Image (cartoon, rainbow, N blue to C red; front, side, top):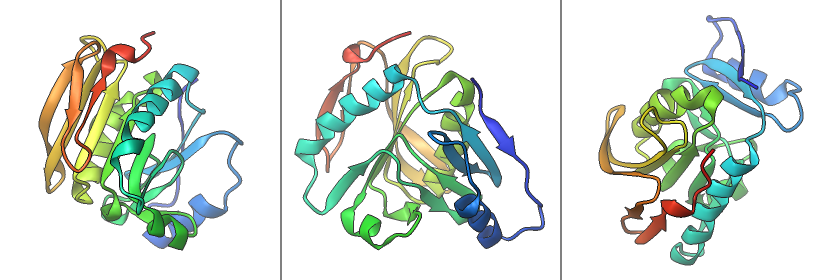
Length: 194
């Protein structure tokens, strides 16, 4: 199943677009994001997709302080890129989630993780990293199950403008290290492959 886009009036303000995103009744279990000003409705991820996210989440828990949380369904806003994004994993201060009604500012995130799905891999490779870098999120981990040369994991960092620098890139089977404040190594050989 592929993603569905919902058009909106190009003259609408960011606030109008967010209000539409918040108030519309979307299909239950779907993932609804605003990507470059376009509302995108995707089916819930496949089980293998969630297994990868869960494995990364387990590795992160022992490394984060109590004031940070790891979330799978929290939306982060990047108004300058017309983005309301829901990363597969988000590390952000717990207080930001306590204070939020529907989303938190992306600039508060310490790490975002995306695991590609076949139907929307381009968003995870192009649109989302540009938004995450623009927001100044220090680390972006892309686990690309559908990469053209075979499954890969790429860690991006040092955001400048809308561009990240590649800090590390590995094929599934090789470890990838997340720097401090996480200081962990993730064994990509444990990730399921389709």
